Image (cartoon, rainbow, N blue to C red; front, side, top):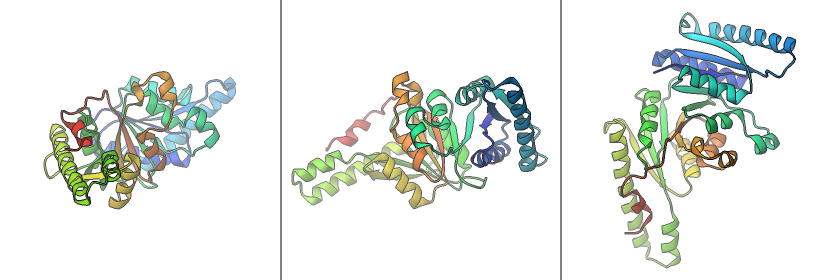
Length: 299
């Protein structure tokens, strides 16, 4: 893997991200940049003092948590606006992954500006790993929330790499609009159940195609098909299987500036509510797989 970048604001939440980034850097044999951003509008003496303190703190943490295996770890302190500086540093380093800690939410502020995590995800075209777990380590169980689009293959390749060969679930949530329509129309219960079985079987077939395109073998993954709200069912699946990493594709970077400001996507709900680490992978487009639309049409 190419260089990884982890950004720290020196909080305990960021410490978790740095420790996990160090762990992944060793396992994936990827060089790592540890970055801190200082507000460059501070008075010069204050700015310089904060830069020196941050550099000393980060170097001490890297030595403590990385031990003797830190030859490929670079510590940087830069000035600027946090999310912009993170994205610019990741672009300059051609980082394959940005690692961030989960931020404590400020309800009033977040309504208008969003957290640094959300703003990075909206701005970058690179995968972002949000670390929530208190201790670093391998991902024993990974759940990838899969859209039936061709661009999902990149999501699954990265999910497989981070899972390290451990359990990987591919989950897709089917809409229950048609089931509701059949219920309102007084369709027989047997007909509704048969429709569900047929659609679920077709969906598992699509998941198999997606997995094959991503280079996953038949024994590399397990299917999860559910009905309802994508965010709610993904949350439920994470809890059911005890997943410690959830992978989700995002399209926020492709939106216009006004659309980027709006919250409420499935990815943003999962980032907010999931108790496990979350990997948000930007999708370069939305090319629906042939026949996937039939999953919402009764046959």
